[in-house]
Length: 239
Image (cartoon, rainbow, N blue to C red; front, side):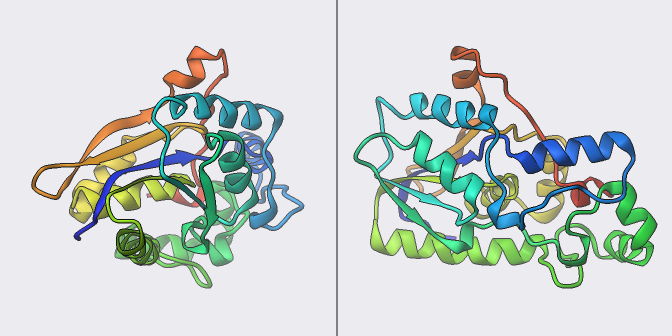
């Protein structure tokens, strides 16, 4: 697609209480992840806040023109803590995390135990097009991000845009900005870890395409002695 932006970066939100609960549930072999809030309200941990502040150091010398954030609390708080002074923060629901429908709050073990038919359907359709009942496919997320990029290009041509969002956003943008075909995208996603507080960025080429210039960068975390953390979507761990 044609995107008239100079630079696009994704800051994955800092560690959240949901990330911690998911890791604990997976390690314990539980079916369900113990999270009291709805997904949109899950807050950052103290470490997640430190990760967000550390990410702000990466943009201090060359700030973005605008920060666009997912409407989910963990991403919004990350944007607030990372955005350089004077840079506008705009919330947009098209950046929200992928909705998992009936698989929400289930661990890998929980999906296998409670929805074996869905697991078989996912394997038949493939990860990109599989949509859990009541949820979204990867393709659905790509469609809303395509709309957001087109709107940003029209409203802010040539801008430097920082997105405060989620792990899935990185993979969707590889598809949109780099033009990765589905098989290549899924192979890359399977081999890629997107740590909390990491930054992935693309710059526009002379021919109008985009090249990745930062790949899940965490140097800013190490520089401030802030530990990076990683947590995959439990439903995405199933092949």
